[in-house]
Image 1 (cartoon, rainbow, N blue to C red):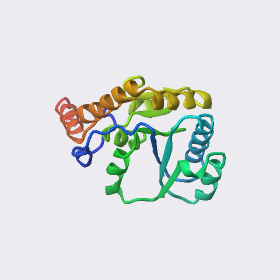
Image 2 (image 1 turned 30 degrees about the horizontal axis):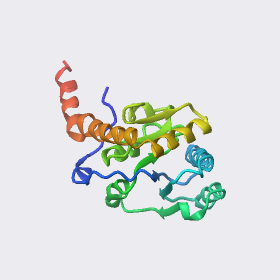
Image 3 (image 1 turned 90 degrees about the vertical axis):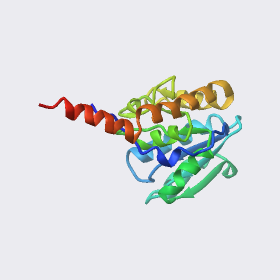
Length: 198
C-alpha cells in the first residue's frame, strides 16, 4: 500500500508556534458530506462557547450562505471567514492556527489533514472513512465517534484547555508527516514496491 502523502517542502521553514485558542478549518462549501461536516462543527462549537477560541474558516463555494447560517448561534467576532485563498498561502495560514478542526464526514483521505499536521497543528476529527489513514488517534490528533457532536466538542475543548497535550500532539503531528508522509518517503516506498515487482 502507498499511503497518502504530500509535498512537505512548503511547510519546512515554518516557525514552531503554539496558538492554542486559534482553530482552523479548510473546506469547500458545497452540499453533501462537506455541508454535513460544517453542520457538525458548528453544533460542536456552539456547545463550548464558554471556552476561549476563535475559528478561521478557509474556503468558499456555492453554499457559502447556508454554511454561514449554520454558525448563527456563535458570535460573529469568534469567526474569521477568509474565503478562497491561493494555495501558496495555505501553509502560513495553517501555521497561524493552534488546532485543525474538521469532522471529515465521508472523507476519502483529506490531504488537508496532512497539511495541517505538517504545519504543526494537532487534528480533531471523526474516526470515520479515510481519516484514520492520515491522523493517528491519540498521537497526532483526537478522533471521535461518527456523528457524536458532544464527543467532538469535548475533544476540541480538551485540546484548547490542555496545553501540554496539545503541544505534544502538535510535535508528533509534524514529525509524523515529515517522517512518514512526505514526497520523499512516498518515492522511497514506491521504489521498494517497484523493486519487488517481477
